[in-house]
Length: 358
Image 1: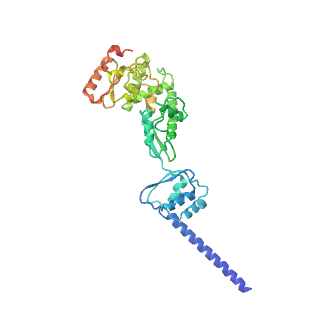
Image 2: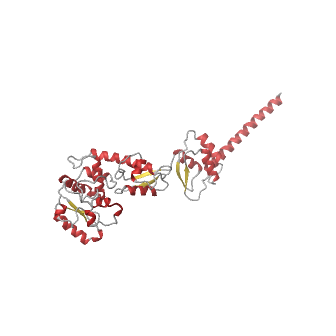
Image 3: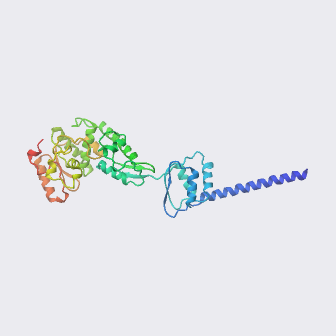
């Protein structure tokens, strides 16, 4: 009986030693697995698309030769990181990364964010072109769609697209699309426009937020230096108030569409289009570009003054004048002495006093 008891005791001790040895071996093996480097020789990106499971992800990494013992990594994720969600996206990996670092990135969802910049003063066509060039941004709005078809695809009905999207730098991640960016830009413009309209000055010559958007788009296109936005807005506000035509070149250019080749001729100034403010009274029917916040604020808070004219100096700034005679002298100086600028602003010197009268 004692012999049996001694045998059982030895068996228990042996089992404990074996279990401890196995546990110790497992611990050190796991530490080796977690501390192994991700085997890449240069920066790489790891895609985790929707529907990816830990087993599929770590198995794929093992097949690519980036890690060893993918099953151990999967078990560690399941047992030691319970409740962790494998967040989809694109992850930037560096050559000195260890597996434990990779697991931390996946757990925290440190996905790579790319960016696309939509510039103030661009039109809708330029916005779409920038989105089409954006790296790894999913393209869901084919180039052959018209502007109105794009608006319909976005669920925005028959709204004219120009001016409706806020220019800014937008961040995006894997599996986001051009549609996502445009909808964010649309919502942002509606918010910024509403905020600007709430802060508008009294006695404006415009009566709706949409008119403010139209005017802001013209100010954006005419402004070469930011500090002049308010003064340019003041010129346009005074012209609208007294019934004087805006006579601004960017509206002519927009109305010319694809016929514009970099120059405005006398015939272009006289050719009727819905946007030619040398021909029409008041504002054009829609915005001509995407204005930024500062242009929107300037449109509803024009600076006081007496000037009715301005001409570009050629360095981005303008000379402002109260009378047509003063303006024509400034135009002659800057168009003759700096002809390379090839730019005019309301109105050109070639038009007579009668032609520029309200």
